[in-house]
Image 1 (tube, rainbow, N blue to C red):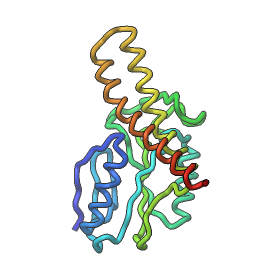
Image 2 (cartoon, helix red, strand yellow):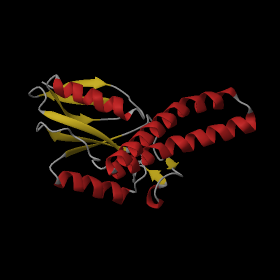
Image 3 (tube, rainbow, N blue to C red):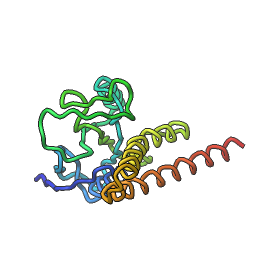
Image 4 (cartoon, rainbow, N blue to C red):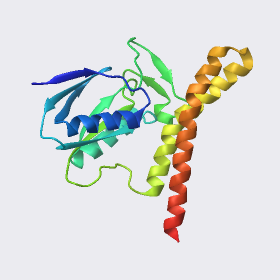
Length: 195
């Protein structure tokens, strides 16, 4: 018997990943996602593990190639949105993305900014980025949209002195600081291991 839960995590990737892994520990396997729902079927407790990967900077071809690579490695992959936009025909400009992913439409990567990656549990930790350099590069990719939003909100606040821009910037700043702290910690760990 399947169960459907309504959840929206937005850009809180770690929180979404923890929740999915908690559901797997409770004996539920993800089988389908929509903009705001997750559908699960029963499985053995802890049978599966999940990672949530941000791919919003990729072009459609890049995202599909990455998905195919993960599936060749034996993982199951679900696309997921990072926003709740129910309109049709929208175009989104992503100045922080790779050249092929800067204009996102419904035909490209609009509403498919995340990958939920499922792996059958084998007793080993599940991480898609295993080297320090790869993890640091991934953090920078996740941080770019937040930096862009922070810069736009700072510019909006400077030009209009509107309080809404200040609130928007205050929402973006903790994400930027947390990712910077994580990147600095990884860089320090990488330097320590080099010795």
